[in-house]
Amino acid sequence: MEGIEWWRSLDAGTRDWLIAHNGEALPADVVAKVVAAGGNVASDAWWVGEEGPDGLYLSDEAVDWIEAVGNAEAT
Image (cartoon, rainbow, N blue to C red; front, side, top):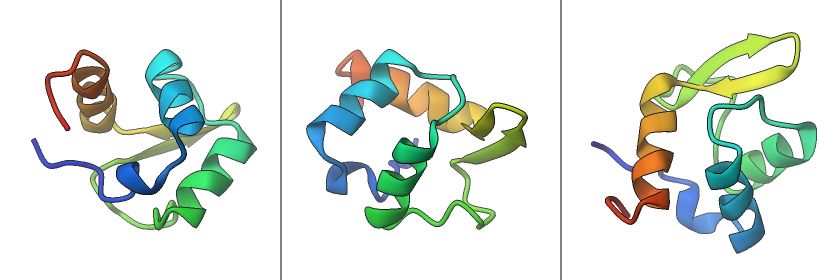
């Protein structure tokens, strides 16, 4: 599975939050950190999911990838 290109540019706290809250809507401060790390949330990148009433969601593939990272199965 392809890695998320901006992942390594995130601070450790944001990566930890994404792992701990994997599959949840991203709060505005996390979206801002993703954008600052180089993630274009307005794109059709594979990791961008749907926008819901609670905010931006990552794609199912991205959720799976983050779970693998959290389980030390991916880098």
